[in-house]
Image (tube, rainbow, N blue to C red; front, side):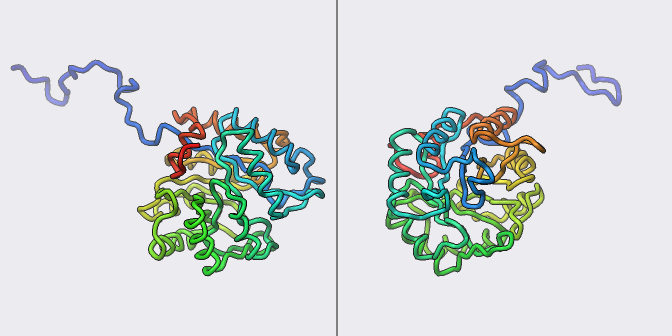
Length: 303
């Protein structure tokens, strides 16, 4: 058999172009879980009239966001004066209304506002949501302190196991990642057996909303973590979104976290932020999960 001249390689027998889909390696999950956080506890209705604060506005927002590609909704509620509240009747009514009007996973915030007493935050689970947020430690939150002492974290986690509520572990800094390891070692896996967490980035007082910070956080996640998402606050929204997509993570978006689409361009509807996330995900060859798929991913039974 003749050999090619020195310094030249023999021609390949496979003529399939290198960019052909069949031979391009897949480096991230095909599906993406998009969570919408439509309201939060920080922005006032006066400052942002389009913020959904009534039950009717929240239901309409949830329906629009589900149609746009969201699979889970992270809920803070407001009272008749549009102020943050953990009123039990309102919480129950909200969970019921969202279940009746959408297929979304209903996740209640146990953070409330930074001023809510710890005992009131524990009672959020009385409203029987599908999921709850569980912040893994105390952090400075702008000029305030978001208090999550270790005994409270443990009590809330055990309560979520007893009530069969799937927690989303919220991580505001790298110390919270270590605390998650400690919690799982002490109390075992959450209800459903899956471990889903969310990096909340860009809060003044927490980890910065940068790609290097996200890389560091993901590298430290316990082996038991089965899925993670990332949230960029304010101007860190897009950098965090793109970094998360490049690393195979999921996304949380919404007016709780950002109020502009670009400098000087306000968000008018939460669905705009979901639509932008879906567009970015499709560029990364990721398609949005349906709520039923997301339920399986985080360990919830089918509805």
